[in-house]
Amino acid sequence: MLILQATHTNKIPPMTLQAIVFDAYGTLFDVYSIGAAAEQLFPGKGDALAALWRDKQIEYTRLRTMCSMYKPFWEVTQDALVFSCKKLGLELNLDAQHALMAQYAILQPFPENLEVAQQLQQQGFKLAILSNANTEMLEVAVKAAGMQSLFTHLLSADSVRKFKTAPETYQLGTDLFGIPAKNILFVSSNCWDVCGASWFGYTTFWVNRAGAPLEELGVTPHGQGSSLKDVLAFALQHREPA
Image (cartoon, rainbow, N blue to C red; front, side, top):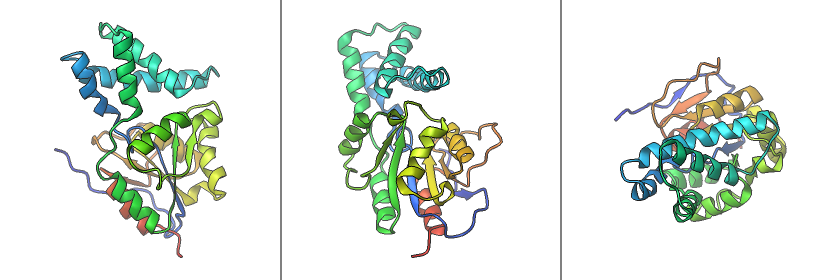
């Protein structure tokens, strides 16, 4: 198993971070954990379906934002599921569709999430989630993970009707906290999301769980590690003085 050491790749002024904004899917919640449910419905095809479903979901958000044809994330996710099953030659009846979408609503959180979020809150950081998901999806996922007391601010792309990486979506974080983007740590496991947030002006941390290569977009995150535990170490090193 590949183990990454937390790295600090861009120099930033010490002790500047006041708030932390987390992406949801892939970062706090494991989008590929749905593969187990998919495998029960489509033996031998669960992992392939989970991977294609995720890729098509993100592709649809980008196309709809570029063409100003917004649809709520729940509907985009459902459309991506239907396409993926057709692409893989899987017969998706309504019962299977409802079962998979219900599982998506309560994706498994990564095991370190709760402890790390609690420690960050105890250290005085303001916390929020900024996601493509509509608010109802976020509320269900956060409650199912037992983190509703830690993430009281759920920022949704639905409020601006544009998905990440649109600047209007990243603006939600600075509007909430009323501080410059450079004083907010944006955390995501999606490198494309880290690139978008970096272009917007956030201090960024890439949770590179899979040991993937950096995107060739001319962006290097300020920090990088393999889990949220590495985010904790980075945030404490660069926090705002009390």
